Length: 137
Image 1 (tube, rainbow, N blue to C red):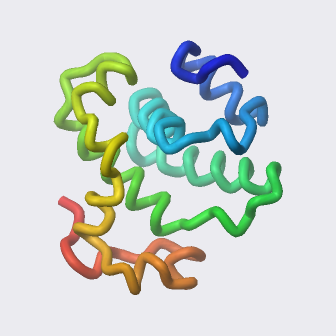
Image 2: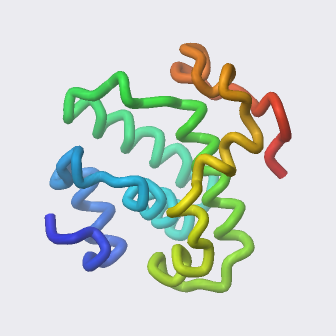
């Protein structure tokens, strides 16, 4: 796959769901873009289902099932959706430029809502657990 930043949203989505993305190329920013595409195209509810299924399938395909973390995936999706609702951007590149902390210090948003003990638990890895610090708005 060519640089994911240079692909259209549709091409990025198709490349990901058709396993044309190498595991080492699926960066943090690529995760954000996957969520952004799904929220913008399908809405938050369907988008979240898509992302969960797409990521589960991807980690199975690349043999990295232990990398999937349900609470972290849903919480991250919720963070990205929160910023999309506040955004004036019409493209992913504009969105990530509008909210650079999503790329630079994403964990800050997760740790504002989850204790390290909870987010690192095996239970949180297997199923979604609500935040134990500050609930999402």
